[in-house]
Length: 483
Image (tube, rainbow, N blue to C red; front, top):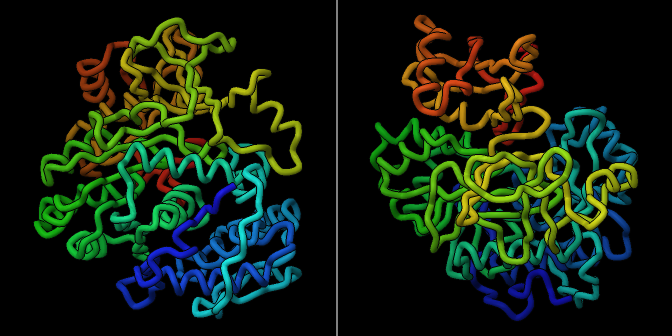
């Protein structure tokens, strides 16, 4: 197949490709080609290479170098516990671990040969001889049960997803992306680092997310911002007292949110303050990107847009039967098919087989409704967000959005629990805006019933100081019972 990074071969050598922090560390395309070429020479011939994925320049150089060598990269989360890390290393059996000089590696990595990445190294970019089906990345998913599974993502999936997003977002070499996402997930690494490099554009990584960095970079010519809902929530909270942030966001060509649903309330606050709409897209580790609101389309708050070019998407009933019609109300599980999919769970043929239908559709486990014109609205995970109450199938997401519109609610999560009469009753977990005056169940039930429907009102309200979240800002609903 053609190179994943054509700009590294005869491209704009003096253009800045990567910049980390507030500008003190950067590489041009010419410098990146040399540093990544040196990594490629060191790892060529390996089967799999681990990358200690800190938010630093060396992580980007390491992953690009491994991919140039036609080898599979295994990004490691520096915050992983030793038990989880030991499982990942045992499962993926990397021959090397690449790390930034000076990085302290935990005990489970003691038996893996370490290579420090030299961001100023020099080497030639090798000829790309890899096949499109060859593994590019093995990304471990944090499953709700059992140890993480390694999703094997082929080079074809990386290329097709990034090219489909280029089509949807009109993403070109002129774009400068800013973000502060972790580099061990698909969002921050594939979209946020490999995406700009495939286009021949630039990426400015904040190192650590902060509204000051967002203001600085967008004011200084960045055109796109990637973030997760937690980041956009912080932006929405800051906007009323930060006119410079509002002005900077107004300069952006595209604001993109992903990894979890952005509450409609935050959509509205950002639009009101900046005149800019945040667009959402939908993907998973196993599928990369499936849908997005298009840059030239209608940005409907609460939706993740339409299927990307090359992606087939359908909604199915519990028995696997496709929904007969898309009416914007009927809930079904999303199944997808296309060149963006992973090939297997490493060493888990049983899990791989269970994830696909006989005719090749991947079972996402995500529940959604679809509008007649194709727009998709995620309502939650099948395992944790589909509530069956009084004969209705109810998605937790729309109730959460309604709760967040109440002025006494700062954060909200919705789950179901067994009920002898209804089957399941709706439970709202609330972080009050004022802990001294938390909203009661009657008040919130009436609020939701007036916006959605009476059968979607919460029957129980539980107050918390904070919702349990993972490192991408997703609410960990299975931990709510322990909160």
